[in-house]
Length: 252
Image (cartoon, rainbow, N blue to C red):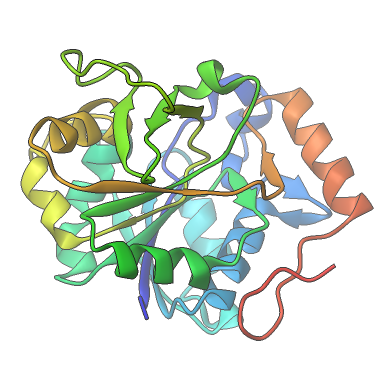
């Protein structure tokens, strides 16, 4: 079982401004509780014991709220970024905290009603360097299309690598921000610079033939990237809260 995770929480949340001028996006309330609380509960239900949270914009508020993580039976540590390093740069910057074991990465501004333990089992069975949780979405192009072949292997992300020709049977999906990474991914990341893991690291891995797999799910997904999305997420959570049983399986 994988016991470590990283939560990406450093972003400015510009599309949520002016709400994020005084409160960081991960602490926006969904169902009366900061979304980050829901994310940490999701990770703990999935067997995670240690979490690294990266911080930048109003990060002191997040650190003060979460503390050492004991409320979720987690050990939480922090990776401060000055300047902000984007998703890939942030993960690389936290390499010394994540160590030499596989780990889960989740966004602090979205939540999936997903059995994380099943994703981890899928990842370990396939033996890839990474597994991306993917979902069908009619608006997939807005988030960046991930193309998956019939064997659940990721072939292109946002059209990259550009020299890969699409084949019949590939599925166009979107990536809601949960993935499982082996420490080998750090070798495909340049230190001390800002870059996106989806637009830089994953295409680099695919270009070398590294096995990257996709776990496809139709799970409910909440995101709070805009004021309208925040209101919709809050309404949906109040209608039907996300809950997990003792082994991390979503329960009605």
